[in-house]
Length: 65
Image (cartoon, rainbow, N blue to C red; front, side, top):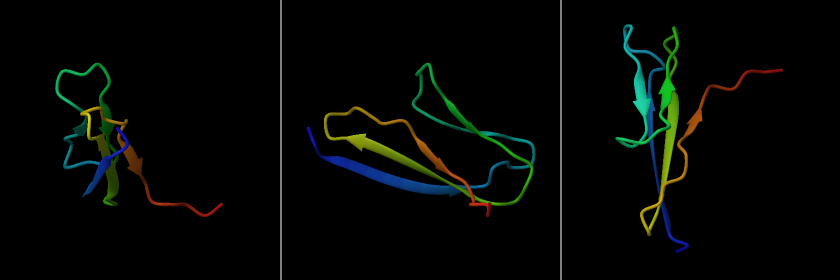
């Protein structure tokens, strides 16, 4: 169908050497967030009313060009 729900969460790129994995249990593709700084990243998860999920979107801090 055409009804989607989205949720966002903020998390640090690394947590004292541990890494966070974003994705469904048992899926072949997992998205890993890692890094050595203290900035937060935002993870967006979108799921359709029929149960299908879009790939997670990870938003990092912008840099000036």
